[in-house]
Each structure stands twice: as structure tokens, then as C-alpha cells.
Image (cartoon, rainbow, N blue to C red; front, side, top):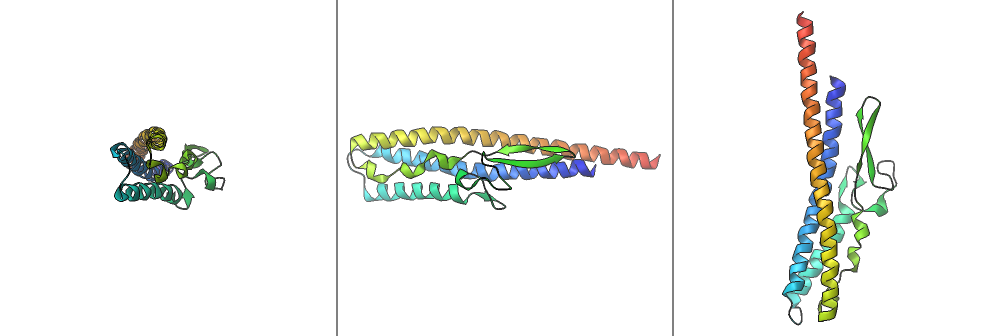
Length: 180
């Protein structure tokens, strides 16, 4: 019973890790949608406000990637992987059973190279089209990652609840046995 409850706690922790990564990815997605809207709204030359907002959104994305952590584990920046806690492929091992567990895999969002986005490309139609293409491609990739994390978080939460239910049933069985 205690082992099953501990497994539930470990799976809950895995769901929390994925949830933190998912929140950051959702914010990145939202920022990219705003950046896309800014580019699409420019007809000739961007205003100072458009340029400033575009740069601020990009800077927030870059900051989120490097700062999204769970207990010191960097979740979105593959440049910081390869530690005892997260391997070079983004796998975090979760002890979930007496003699085993499973890996939770994180995506290297840093590899999407958000540093290549620049408001300098907003000044003429040709560069603006290139910038729009880059933002649109990154938005597509981030949307996929967001969907993966949303589904994974939901699955882990479901698994944790099932394990808690099993633990409660085991506790009832033990109590029933004691009374006999």
C-alpha cells in the first residue's frame, strides 16, 4: 500500500514537471502568435511600438527557455542537459515501481533557435516575409510541443489518481483483514 502511494507521489511529481514545461511552452506559443500578428499588421514600416513589443516578446521567449526549471532541472534548454537529473536527450528518470520506473522526455526548445528572430527584419517587405516564415515555422513546432506536453501531463495525472485509488483499496483490504 505504501509503495503504491509512493509511486503515485512520484508520478504526480512527473506530472508537475511536465506541467511547468507546458506552461512555459504555452506562453512561448502565445508570444509567437502575437509576433505573427505584429508582422502581419505592418504595411510599410513598423512603428516604434511594434518594434519594441516584438523585441520584448522575443526576449521573454529566450528568457523562458533558459529559466524554466523544476528543482534545478532545466526543462527546455538542451544546452544544460547531461546531468545526473536529466540526460543529454532530455530524459528524466522517474522511480515509480519497486524495481523500475520510466523516463519523462522533454523537448529541446532552445534548438528552435529563437535568437534568429529580429525586429530588424520588419523594415522591408522581403525581410518581413522571411521573418513571418520563421515565426510561423517556430509557432508550428511549439504548438506540437504544447500538445505533447498537455497530453502527457493529463496522462500522468490520470495515472497518479489511479495509483492513489489502488492504494486506498489496498488500505481497505488490510483493514478488512485485520477485523477478521
